[in-house]
Image 1 (tube, one colour):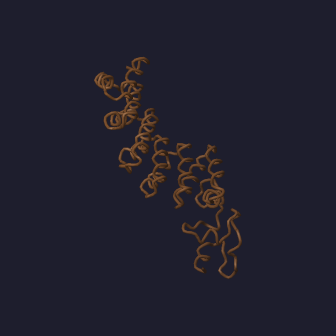
Image 2 (cartoon, rainbow, N blue to C red):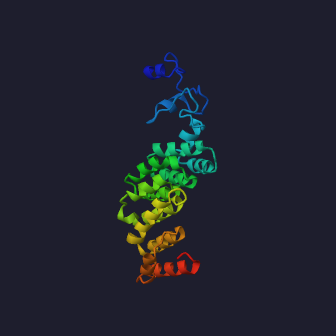
Image 3 (cartoon, helix red, strand yellow):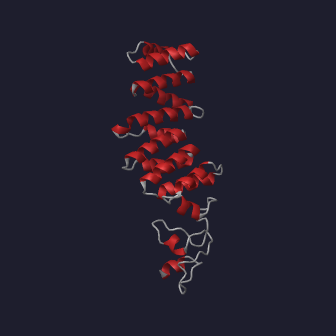
Length: 238
């Protein structure tokens, strides 16, 4: 519309220029403006993250191209790669694309993407929720651990949630040992037997396992806990 063209100074309301690309990002004016989340037809990198709009808007959100685009960004050390993946995650409503983007963000351990990942966790698609839980676990920051701690997952995702909490606590231990130990103690008390065994080992590795916890595990009816207690004794973790 003319009002849009007046707003963007690189456009001319008196000329038919919808097919043009004044910012040289590979996207036409029409493609950039007429979308749910418009981007500037005048700036090749609208969000200023170091990656052009073509990569973010076309490749990462293209059902045919997104796989290669996101795999390439997984290996780029520049923070712009994580920002591009996060931006695509925030925009997409396609469950398959979201699952892939969540996987890539987890591989990058993109701490800044936690709010976007949490938003997908609160959605209704079960597989996207599963991917979001795993991403939060692998990101392993204090914030991702907090999100997992306060989440009540769908019953069908309980084992994934426990696994993600365990991974997040383990990765978070280097920067927030008390928080990691608290999560491991919760898992030891409440989780399924295999996860409780892993939490026991985790507490032992942190030097946070009490003699009472160890004796209780060694005498437990669950095989996983007894084996974990024996393994700790053999390794000197207790």
